[in-house]
Amino acid sequence: MGPHERWSRLLEILGDRGRIDVATAAELLNVSAATVRRDMDELARQQVLTRTRGGAVLSGVAYDLPLRYKTARQAGEKQRIAKAAAALVPSGSVVGINGGTTTSEVARELAVRTDLAGYGGQTALTVVTNAINIANELAVRPYVKTVVTGGVARPQSYELIGPLATMMLQAISLDCVILGVNAVDPRFGAATHDESEANANRAMAERAERVIVVADSTKLGRRAFARVCDTDAIAVLVTDAEAPDELVERFAARGVDVHCV
Image (cartoon, rainbow, N blue to C red; front, side):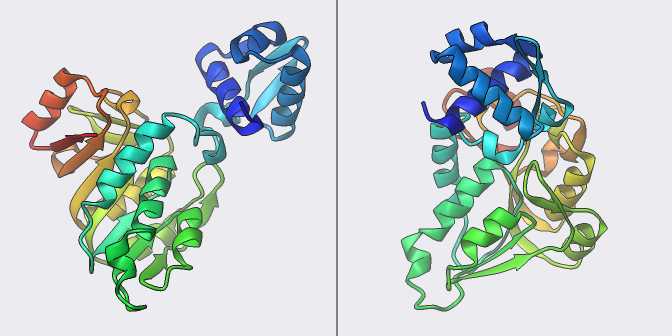
């Protein structure tokens, strides 16, 4: 287990428990106590946890963990979801993509689609994004026209948020939008932890003819603080094969086309 994956796992454990001592963390991670101490010291330096005598407690910053610590979660599921979602985007489309680990994978899948690369340098796809990491990856693809919103960068998700982002999104039209969310529930719809992030994502959804939500099964049936869109606004939900049948049926009853991959 490399440092990145180890840090992610340590933060996940802290997210569940709120606090942990060095000995328990070492046992759960199957590493030495010295390694855990070094990891805790480094994460404390990055201000995502607070060191205590003999362990660590969850820092307020870690409630919505920075994107770089989320990449190891449900990695295989997210890659399958991303591949399936990218296949739903026709060439020539204008597609919106927000920030997040799963949507970042979708962007990577779009970037390597052979049918898009075969346009001989002409624009095969227009991507509108408020995520600076996604823009960075797509900007080098000559067949993808990359449009970036303005706004203030949010460190946790690399998303541009605020009035500038919302104003820009309200002035455009999208064929479809691919949204990553923190929670999606058949009754309460799609939501995220941060209200400013939700505002930008909502503006993107409202300007799209078709809304595609990508979310692994751990996010289904859950609620988060700030609503992005109602369930009725979601055309397609792409999730993994572990999605509970009962939830899939409830989404389908609301008119959502659910793809379990």
